[in-house]
Image 1 (tube, rainbow, N blue to C red):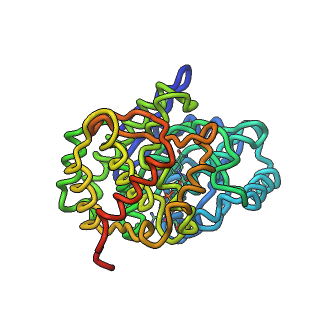
Image 2 (cartoon, rainbow, N blue to C red):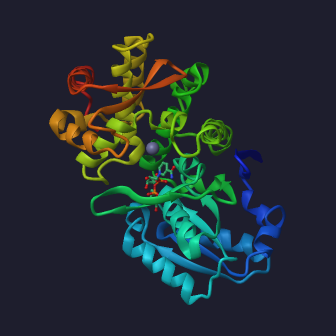
Length: 369
Ligand code: NAD
Ligand code: ZN
């Protein structure tokens, strides 16, 4: 089983990834469970249908009585209404400051549970049991949030989990779209950290149908990148911003396409192509070949660039300007000096519009799927 320790100032926790990660509840995590007066699982309803019994079996070995709160699948669980429902659920079940939560689902359920844990009685402990590939990104680092009618992730906090357990067999039931989503974030971790690793991913013929064994080692590498950055900059004052590579434009695509048409990672893939194009014209030496290889790779693996042909630059711009990372009206981007060497810069609307024209040109004639 793969293991990695996330170290943040005076706090640390472990991330485990393997076929039998949940067996750790009866061993390494038994003292933590024993120390909690109440334990609750918050689970995504799809995941509950597919895998809840497996988690419950593993927890049964600890002899604890555990309550379960099922929440709507995916992004819809990150609403103020569901958040309040969860808080009431905990109060009705007599949870205290000494209780423990387990998040069981993708990044959405993890973000919700993390925020419930961060705010219930001013903060209780929680364990992340992520069930998507994308959650190798979201489950580590302690960012938690819910959405508001005005925007995504607008209310949240930093609250680190007590541990993260990936049971890899759960990835077997992921739909292709969610695999694409998670693999895009893995590629992001490669792009911001390591040229050779990026090359290896871009030449991997099974990228869109990864085996569970291969994923265990690759996701651990991605988590290592994230853990290293978070250890350096927990509250995103500096290097943590690198994790937003592909996200300024990616979030705009997500918003313009109305959240739900494409998955988060599919939008980030478009955003990464856009950032590579912006990087070509800046300091350093991202070669046009790098971008073109990336675009070809994306198309070969089932990603689409349709949104840039179906919407105008102004539509994307209005969302980029609203991005909470935009400061004083400037557009902030993470670009690459070269693959593996990210930096943050501010760009003008004109530069962004020029890159938009280029991404359109270079992705013209995409075969329709
Ligand atoms: P998700 O949680 O919305 O799950 C996607 C879909 O997959 C859902 O329909 C879910 O029911 C289903 N699903 C989950 N696990 C499954 C499994 N094993 N088998 C079959 N279906 C399964 O999506 P996600 O991509 O995991 O997470 C996206 C969320 O993560 C967004 O809300 C995003 O804001 C957040 N996020 C947070 C951070 C962070 O640092 N906190 C980082 C990146 C993303
Ligand atoms: Zn992301």
